[in-house]
Image (cartoon, rainbow, N blue to C red; front, side, top):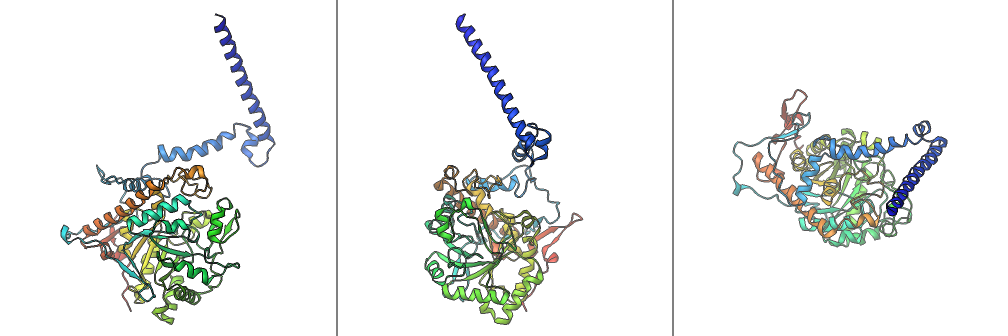
Length: 494
């Protein structure tokens, strides 16, 4: 009886103590909220006003996991992410009971199935394609689907290692992004496209200009197959790369050639390139120094703007042309960027790709300049659409992030990525096991290629690069669809 009474007294005191502590905390928070001047809600409704911020934060979680339908989320919906997840895990991607996609939405591409498609033994794998035949060391690319640029710094060490190893397994190239060449890019032994950004990370001198000796050192790596001069990217056209200071570790600073722990903001353009003619000069300079194919990456803003490039090529001759052009849509972007640039600047890849392909073809440069399409192209239908529209290759960044385990937490710029992909916090990085993720990366790439080949077979051609705009219909505002060849007539060579 005495023990029971003691226990009751203890519990009663504990209860009173807890209540008293809660009241004390509420009073302290109330005083803080009432005296602070930055938040009007908390100032007018002390303590209670804090629940608004809490519920706003939780709302993002509940919408993603409980309330949003499979096709509702942005930038990528659950159906898109789940397709990548199942592919990366090696699971089947067949579905039952019909599509959940609303095929009546304006702009939806619908592939034209052939009445008599090739039989199975007439179905071929996609052919390799040579890039930069005029360079001293041309590159024979074996895959039409490859890994787009993601810098070491923007993504973590284990992420780069897993992507490098997975790319080697899948036989695809890996773009370094503008952050320089790290040992982890080389570790997997995959083919590499070295991107030269406006800050020239990894090949810069003390003044931020191109260092030819460092460029030769990069080119000396056998697995570095091509160089890409980045003019702009879809996430932030007109603005350079942004790497927050908390991500600039000692190692990343060494790779890039920048100070440790300080925000690294790239120039908004290459300072030595004032016009298209200057760009062609820079392309030729890099190609001559490295001996390897050299192309450009850009987000298109207008037809007039990009037409100037082809006019400059016509004036100087085809030998001066870039060996490839990577088109990034305004919907692209994996890194930090101002919202107005993400939302409102740059042409969508759905508009830019057919337009640029037409201009290229009209100048008779279809065989000379391959087009590489990028920008939210993560599923087989997206990739097949791009190839039919005029692309020779397709690259993806966020598709491979999903293959690594990205959950679209939208924390890429905060160094708190919960899956370890875009953070340099060792606690979070420990969750990304390279030996597992490299298999997922390879499986995703192989499944994309397989299913794009399946679409090509369905429309009646032997392999994906033989698809044309006559094989795609596009849904119009009245609900009907028309051939993409009518919507975007194919230009003929002059």
